[in-house]
Length: 290
Image 1 (tube, rainbow, N blue to C red):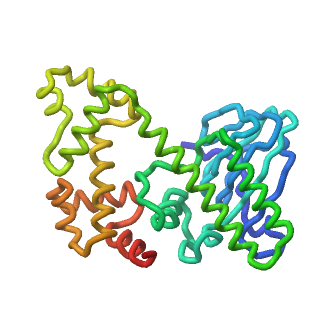
Image 2 (tube, rainbow, N blue to C red):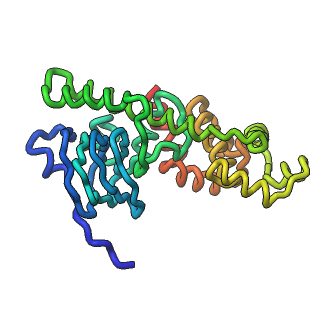
Image 3 (cartoon, rainbow, N blue to C red):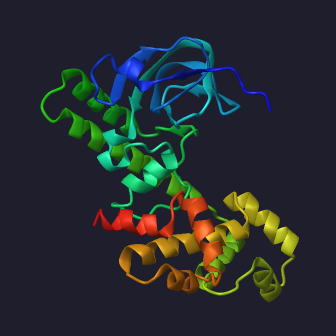
């Protein structure tokens, strides 16, 4: 496939000698061609409108929308009309020095939010539009802007804490929406998976037990949850394995067996694909944050 022509922005060209590894500013954004950057970007729309293309998907942005752009993600602005925003550009070490060199937003989240609670793998993602329904995100960003402009003693730590608060609030919203299925039949399937994930469980077993058509339940489950039953089962098992890795000293092979995987190679590969790190790396990271 032919490479798409685009510009890449570097943090060093935007910091203007500050070396804070972050830049924050209100901005009147004109149309901008396709580009990516070697840093994370948090964008909050404060006024006007634009057509925003993010990884090939175009959406209409307006006041109260916000999103996080990952390393290497292509995006552009078109047909901007009095379009204003707050731009927060940062490197991962702004949040934690141990994350220096991190080039994935998902891995950043797994590293910096483990200390608060165990998130659902893959839940909070970059390259997705979020909506600030209650104005709380805007309030936090305004406070961050004030700290950044005044640069009083300790401003970087205040900035860091408020950035983390934005990420946590957004994650809560995602987790809440993920668990929002109201179909009682699908709730039964979810409960079935939650209660039987340790064994060789399948959706076919549920359908046979309750006399449902497998194709019908498969389609309904995907429509309600956005994933297949197999994907959901893997998600539960990896979440449980994370809990064992954090709270026990059990060997990885034993943990794999406790969550339903006898094939340790398969478990290791699945864990790395979902969590973007090995079980050993996850255990080391979480133990260093207790």
